[in-house]
Amino acid sequence: MPFANFKIPQGMMTGPQKADLIHRTTDLLVSFFGEAARPHTMVLVDEVVDGGYGRADEVFDLEALRRLRAHHEMGSR
Image 1 (cartoon, helix red, strand yellow):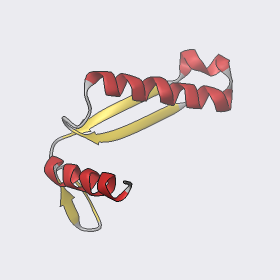
Image 2 (image 1 turned 120 degrees about the horizontal axis):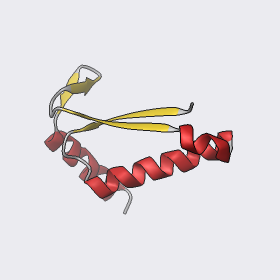
Image 3 (image 1 turned 60 degrees about the horizontal axis):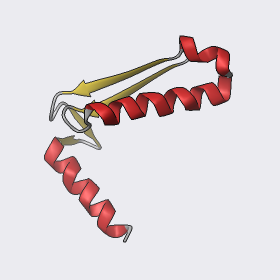
């Protein structure tokens, strides 16, 4: 059974965005394992409480991630 687990900040994605993530992930896994895997594919989207995660000794919160996203979007223009 293919399984994917995403950890995202609470409130960062809307319901439709999470549904899209689940559908696209399922399609990706089916492209590797074949259509027979679809009914057995599990995609779990865990929402982590704001500030409950970090990287490189830095605690992230939703506002920090929004600033990071804005910085990346400005750099891609």
